[in-house]
Image 1 (cartoon, rainbow, N blue to C red):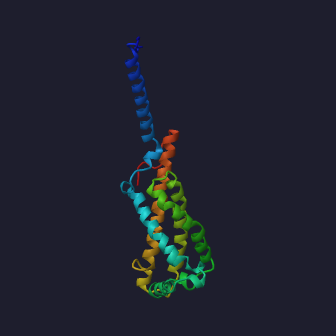
Image 2 (spheres, rainbow, N blue to C red):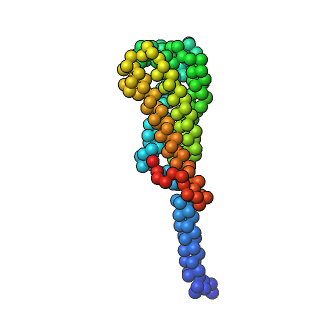
Image 3 (cartoon, helix red, strand yellow):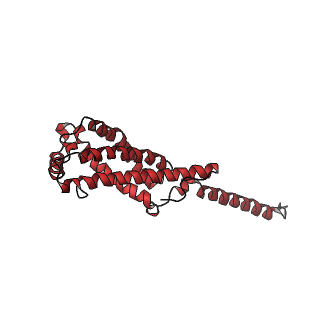
Length: 212
C-alpha cells in the first residue's frame, strides 16, 4: 500500500507561515500599545495636576448637591440637615449670597446647575481614564470659574458688616480666593497643554515653553 508523503519543504513552509503570523501579531500589538487609547491609561497618581483636579471635582460634587443647589430641591424631599448646614454657614461666615443675594447671583447658581454639575459628573471618570478632551473641557471650566469667582470676591469685599476673620483667609476670603487661584491655575495649565499639542501637530513654536 502506497502511503503519500509530504514534500521535504513542507515543514519549513509551515514554520514560515507560523513565524509570519506571529510577527504580524507582534506588530499589531505594538501599534495598539503605542496608540492614544493605551497611553490614556496612565495612572492618575502619575499625573499630579490631574490628581489635584480630580480631588477638586470629588469635593465640588457633594458641595453642590448638599449646599449650593439645595434651593432647587422640592421642600418635601429636602433633608432638614441641609437647611441646618446653610444656617450654620451663614451664622459663621456671614455670606450674603446665601441669605440676601444680589439679583445676578441666581444666574450663577443656575449656571452651576446646568454646567458645573454635568461637567463634574463627566470630569471625574474622564480624569481617571486620562481622556484627551480634558484640557479643552477644563480650559473652558477654568476660565468661567475664574471670572465668576472674581465677581463674587469683589462683591464680598463690599460687605461692610463682615468681621475681619470672616473677610480674611480664614473666612470667605480664603474660600473664594482659593477657588479663584485654582481656576486661574487650571486655565493656564490647560492652555499650555493645548498650545504645546497644537504646536507639535503643526510644527510651530509653542507660546508656553515649559509645563506648569
